[in-house]
Length: 631
Image (cartoon, rainbow, N blue to C red; front, side, top):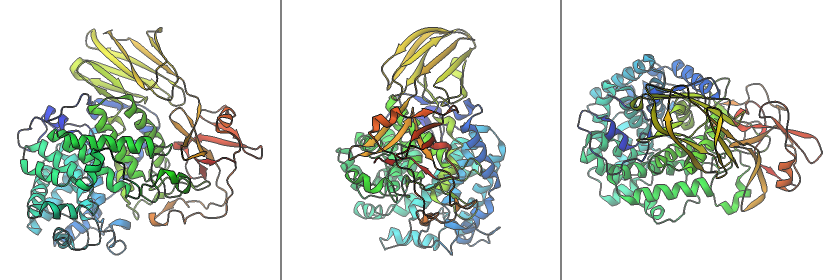
């Protein structure tokens, strides 16, 4: 039986739930402290997250698998059944990137997530069709390798020989591996299982001749999360060859300093690092070797606490920068690559399962609203690449058929897996991490918990139990760091008032059908800045970043739907003067006033005119400012 813990399910969950690729699942070296719920046991109710999911579902159905398969068939000596898509998938335009085919892997993952979330068999049908096509490619080529980038197997062979290459073949192959893995684990696709095993075995044989030194040299080229994939495969099958490959794909030049608590990230390409760090955590789960988890946990603390913007994003032009130079990078149009936020949330979730602290959930919530939900055009379902903070700039979204950036691919996944991190559980307790209208079925306990809320428009959420019989359970509600106090009511009566944010309020009792719980938090304006640039601030309201909504002056209709991510910063450069704010940060925060509309505020500019502030995730098709350089 397939399990469904999201596309990045920890190794311990596979062993525990019996998912495998035809072999007996093995015991894992490091069991998780909490478990996610099966996505099929969580239902989303109306709200912005369900809307985003439906927009992505519609986009997935509009895309044509044969167009994504075109170059796979070409490399296998087969005639394509349809013309290839444009952008990064087009051989003519993007030979220097050699990411052709990455979209198909993301698409498989997205369809697997959508299938698990909705149960709609049309996603399973697409998965099986693609897997059968890839099997035909393997048969025609006489090898387990399937790829779509120019020069195909010859490019991989040159890379394995240590020759200089143009492109990132392992990065691209990682997406195909991951898509097939998700097709197996979330949709129980037998065709995907067969293709994945053959591809995995090809990888074992192809890399076996490399010495450890040669392998490390190869890993200087971006390789995605190949260590994650082979750690997953090891747990899924018990094949020791896969464990060995997972350890070899764990780049020692990156891991060892992190495991020793050394931050040397300045100047490194950000999204090259995050997937391999996720892989470190996976290898820890599969092997129990603490150095891998030490590296992953230190990296997370470094990025989440000292290198992130108020939105949870990080980086400039895809690279980490020295935080002493915050003022030189914060206003770039090329900040906060959306893929990095996607992968940081995968890492956060994986670490939380082994160390269920509210700190992880606080970061997850902030990045989910201000990075992931904010990345989608609510009108078209298209997604951003960067979400920069240049005052007066705007969000730029990919086109439906001619972009296919890396963030287009992760964007397909982001909005169909919201239900994977709302609730968690251990043997006795149910954790509520996110305040999203939804319900969760805890089958082992004969319980259903329904959450009704308009959060973040109101800072209150309400729960109701339905149980097969009265049952003693513990309910753990996150008291977010942003809420000074929180009040807990059961069946209308106050039972606890918490003044310790950043923890879980814990309530154990024998619950019966109809029991209600109300969790009242406090949202209020706040301000954030970096230590090196205290005069540059972002305003917040609870977990939300408030953006100045600056209108569409000088912008043509459709100017925010673009083809080339390389031209971020060049688009929409008509002269525009953003408002100036003046004063001390704390004093300005006190001047933020509610407008009378939900989550809309004003703040006075230096000229006395009000600036409209709204949650950043609601900004679309207009200029904005998230950071302000105070006069």
